[in-house]
Every structure is written in structure tokens, then in C-alpha cells.
Amino acid sequence: MQFEMETKESDINYMRRCLQLAANGLGRTYPNPLVGCVIVKDGKVLSEGYHQQYGGWHAERNAILNYRSRKLNSDSSLSPELRNATLYVNLEPCSHYGKTPPCADLIVESGIKRVVCCNDDPNPLVAGRGFAKLEAAGIEVVRHLLEDEGRELNRRFFTFMEKRRPYIILKWAESADGYMAPDAKGSYWISDAHQTRMSHRLRATEAAILVGSQTYLDDRPQLTPRHYAGRQPLRIVLDRRGRLEGLPEGWLRLRCQTLGEVMDELFERKVQSLIVEGGRQILDAFIAEGLYDEVVVFRGKTAYGAGLRAPKIPECRNVSLF
Image (cartoon, rainbow, N blue to C red; front, side, top):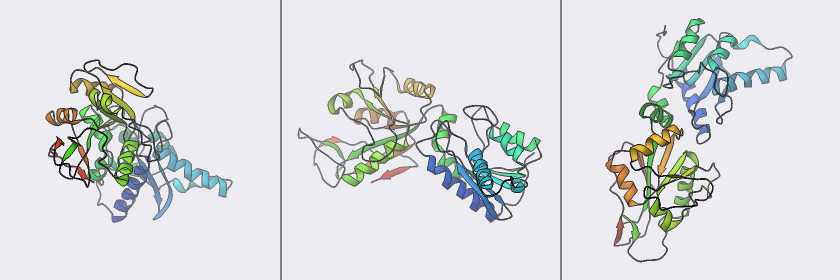
């Protein structure tokens, strides 16, 4: 049974705090979603937590253990304050054993009386079972609070689960007059130092980055977040014609002949998000097949006058121009 009740302003505020906490895990939880948790009783926040990295404790367990740790340090006996408290979490608590034990079981054991949640978990291993376990234990469950905001935060996770492919970001740099490269031979640089740092920050927050074989041969790109402190994404080169050999460590070569095959391969590898940073040809291929969820364009200050035209920005709900 799902309890229906009037949404309180305080519920909305605590859920927004969950989403804020969850965002702290961006780039470190793949392939898991971003989840935050707040535990409240009598208008007082007892504890908070979020999923910090893949393989670590989930948000609910972190919040409960954070609370218990503080109580043990301040009092020799565990206070029963968690009993009858409300737990806010932006994704349905898990009900299965994976890298960690089920969060739903711990919530039940803790005596929490009410759970307010943002999104149902589309993962078939959860998919309503977490809520069912809580309700079977007599816990009041309120669902779908700030549902759209929760989906936006976890857009990578929901895209991966529902479309069986990574969340795809098309990214390129173009001159002030819309060229990816000038006519003249030789080295050139479109982005300034600030834009480069922003680009590397994007790399550090996504799971993988892809270029085509021609871009790899022409530029030998590093594709590292060296100007931003963060994790190294999986580097992928699409080599349909088998032109590459002996790639450096940390690179994945795909011989897939179609983008559909690429999507299937990345889904099997649990790659939840992908930056397409290739040349014009591979960007055009993704655009033609509608394989994009976000577009990021870094526009330089210099006009080239002629050269290789940048793609026309496709119609997309999420476009960022820098």
C-alpha cells in the first residue's frame, strides 16, 4: 500500500537536501546511481549520508551508520531516537544483496516509521521490491516527491536502465564563426584555459569518452582530465576498419560496424555515460541516428573564415554553450 498524504513543505526541503547530497558522488558511483539520504525526527535532522563511491555503503546505510557512530562516541548506549523517525532518500531503497547488504532490511531494523522517496528504481533487481519490503513491515512510504528533479539528477542511470545504452553527450569546440578546424595546416587551439578546465571537468564526471580512429591517428589525443582533479574515464576508439594496433594501456578499441553494436557493447560493459569527442564524421553519425541526450559546445573567440565546419547543433533539450 502506498500512503497518500498532503505533501509538506518540510518534505520538499529535506528531499532537495537529499538531491544535493547525492550530487556529491558524481563521477565516482558508476554504474550505481547518485543517492542521498536525510533522517529527521521532530523537525530535527539526526543524520545525513550519500553514496560516495561504487562498492561503498549506500546512502541509507551511511546515514544510519553515521548516526550510530556519533551516538556511540557521545553515549555508551545507543539512543532509540531513530525509532519513529522519517528517512528521506531520492531512490527506492535496494532489497537485494549486491556489493552491500539490502538497505531496506536495515531501515526496517532501525525502527524508522516513514520513508519519503523521489524515484522508483528501474533496476529489475529492485523495481518495487524495496518499497514492498518496507510496507510489509508497516512503514509508511511516500513516493514520487520531486520526481522530475530526481530523474534529472540521475539522468545517466535512468537512460542506461530504460534505453539500454549510455547517456550520450556530444562535445566539440568551434571557432567564433563555426569551424572545427582552419584550412591552414599546423597546430591550432580553439578553447582558452578556462574552457579547457571545464572540458576536463566534464571528462572527470562521465564514465567514458569516445573518438574515431581518424581523430586518434591525426591527434593522438590523451583524453585525460589533467587540468581538473578527477577520475580518468574509460577511453574508447571506434576502429571499424581495423587500422589501429598497440593502443596504450587504458584504451578500449571497438571494431563494431554500427553504432547500434557500439551501444550494445557499452551496455554490456555497464558504461553508464559517454562523451563523444570525435571528429565531424563521427559526430554526424551520432546525430543522424538520434543517439544523443546532451550537447556541449566550446566556442572560441577567433574567427577562421574557412575550414572544417562544425556540426549544426541538433535539437536537444539540454544544450550548453561555453
